[in-house]
Image (cartoon, helix red, strand yellow):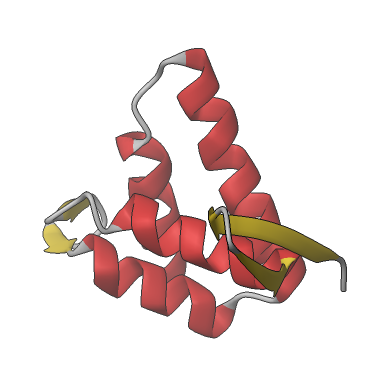
Length: 93
């Protein structure tokens, strides 16, 4: 696993793996959503629940790919709601 050096404070350096960093990014990004509509069963799931579920069933490589998709959508300026709905629907099936 690759190692990333993060500086939170100028006097403090934290060492994390890429997977840990991407896990934190995914949790932070999905915590912004109080509810995500799931089109299959007309229900909803919270962002935190979806993040936990994705981390539970996905491999480290898949988590990194999910975060990459979210980052690419953000760079284009598009909303990621439809992406999150698709992920939730795929997990339910």
